[in-house]
Image (cartoon, rainbow, N blue to C red; front, side, top):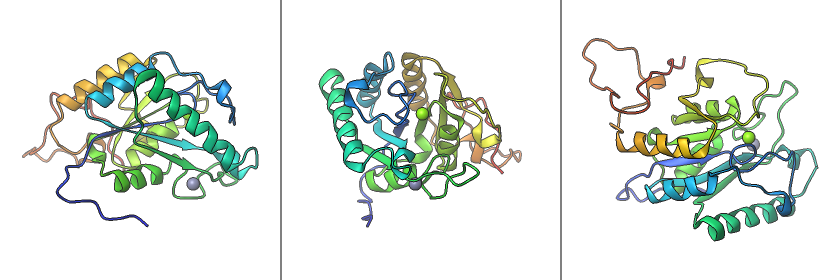
Length: 229
Ligand SMILES: [Mg+2]
Ligand SMILES: [Zn+2]
């Protein structure tokens, strides 16, 4: 049961972080803490972004649970080790972890509201932690991550570590920016956060009508993503 947020508390911007192939190297269906290897620069970048005021929430598809490859207890142990290492090695405190334990349908599409590219995990975290989705981003190594971010009303940042192999395209799957290292990503997000105008992101704005009440000029998102239809 989700509790209503305290309306007097301002909503926080957030970085939603995909785990496999983004925060840590992708070892398919891994639940062995000994095999956790952070992407270069990830811990330091998260520490910076936390200091800049962002909430940090991990959002991860774990269909290995539905497929019976590992148990919830095994995943919980991995998650605990991951959070502990982030805290001990980088001083990073993760605000929340959202996990989808479901598998895809026969066509590979989400069969639940939470498996990315569906936005359920981001929306649930936003309600739980008081997050401002319009001032938030997801970062992930597949276009499904980018799409989940856009479907939630957040920005979608692509982390190019080789995880995407299909490249199915649609307006919702066009990343706002792409990165191959965490330092550049942290630079981008810090700058975008500082320059944010509070306007809705480009992909959910109606086409300009002439009286343009809202301009994202000066933000890193101004290079116009196509509008979702
Ligand atoms: Mg991934
Ligand atoms: Zn799910």
